[in-house]
Image 1 (tube, rainbow, N blue to C red):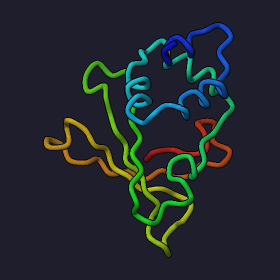
Image 2 (cartoon, one colour):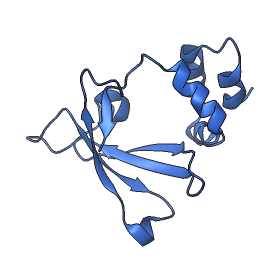
Image 3 (cartoon, rainbow, N blue to C red):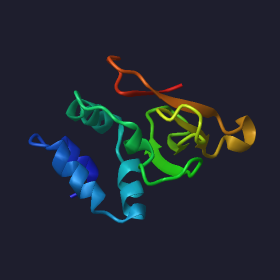
Image 4 (cartoon, rainbow, N blue to C red):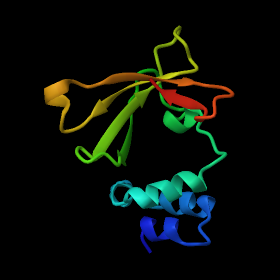
Length: 132
């Protein structure tokens, strides 16, 4: 059963989906995530309502400062749908509560890496972190 069909299942359980994804090898996980279409992404957002990411979800605690963690995805834009965001913890002595990052993809040669920070937003309805 594919990720798409697991998410669209009327009895979908987000914890079971997460465990299934965690059990896949990295290449298969990326392939499954990047195969999910717009309606399934909307359903996934609904299944995740009320959950929030923490810094350790973006960059595990065992990673050192400036050690990159790659996150692969697919957006719903009409072009450049596949993306990769690379996150790291900032150097020691800077704000330890945020992550730094940049975008990697087919447009990088034209427009650059698109640097960003992921900062906590306690009490914000958008989630625990916002990419700015």
